[in-house]
Image 1 (cartoon, rainbow, N blue to C red):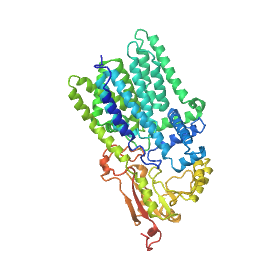
Image 2 (tube, rainbow, N blue to C red; image 1 turned 90 degrees about the vertical axis):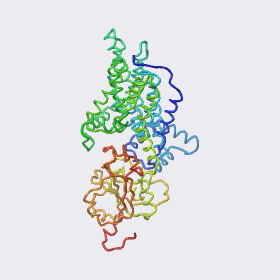
Image 3 (cartoon, rainbow, N blue to C red; image 1 turned 135 degrees about the horizontal axis):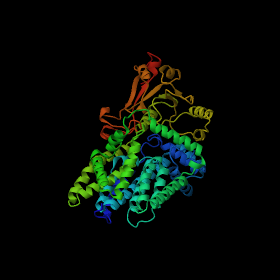
Image 4 (cartoon, rainbow, N blue to C red; image 1 turned 90 degrees about the horizontal axis):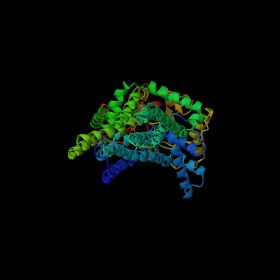
Length: 571
């Protein structure tokens, strides 16, 4: 029997873990705003949710399943009704106009959903540990997850990962409940897993554990076990289709997007990160949990397997099955390790509680040691999130030093560019360009119809090597082209991530350009810092003390001397 001291866990210890976990997940939640590219993919989910909230229930997007889009849509709808009831707005047109002018409120709302999911996951983690190994394991597991770096980090993001992790952990906890003699309502575990899969497709990797539960509940009859497993799979499938209905109603779009995701997962994300299992073990989990906690969790999982209990088999099937497939692809985002994080916190807590059950002070000391690495990284990370983003600092400096109507060329990608207000001519030209590409340009039209905002506006040239939509504001990385287009200034983002790279030939051409402003956000050698190299998120996984602000470094160059040699620069 695995359980050693099952019973009600200490309310003050669990409450402490929840309070600490909540503080770490809500502090710095408004990072980067109103810049909407501080975290990739947030805008995709939010705009799909707003489209659903406006009445079109088909998200027209199936790279993710639909459950979290619908949850976010409901939250946005309730927020709209609250604004309407309090007189803050007088209708949907004003609501949309406010969002276009400053989207911060709705981004913060969407991020808050993830933070609440993250806190709820701590409670479920404690419940699962209590069911498997008793009260002390529950208390330890709650504290381990409350400060687990990767879980703290991603609980700040308007994304599907933390929601999927919650539903996946809840399904495993309910599966473990089903392993107890005399337990009923096994379908609830299947329902939770269906919701997990409807949040993120990869949680379908927990299905073998569900099948095992169905068979294991009927040790005397394989036929009865198979029948229950089939029932559980049917419930999970129904939950998925009910909460992602357009997977069936718009099956062509679904298959197209799902095929893209499968190819993307197998083919990689532009950088070869080597063996996927080693990468997830050493980076996603090694850095996301800290090596002491990861090694302890592996020891706990091994111990569970050797115990050969139904609970241990469920945990092993969930962890090993997910890890085996997640590491088999070429696209290896660190966040792919998230569903394993709470499960590994449970196995670590179970191992510590059982190995030190006669020496509680030793167990407390080990728990504190396991918390040191992830806890310090979590605290340092959220402290950085609370600092002003470098992309906002760059915009503030430009607006206070460069005159209205100036032509500014900006290198890098959308993720690395500061948020500057374009001229109305720029907006009109961009609207014409996107309409020629078959898009409505609704947000651009609203921005054009809005009242003139205070502050300078700029003609912005986006320096990109590729321009598939033939946008007039996008120019190739050529100094001659920049000068021909009248660029007076060139802003260069700098960062180890490829998302802030500048073309090498352009850098050669501007060697004589005068630097008028610099913002340095990294104060250590790049070799000392670990980033997720394929994710356009500019905060690191380690060495947070080397970072002064979120976002890339910047250099602003005057092109006046380059364009007209011998002419005095105004600087």
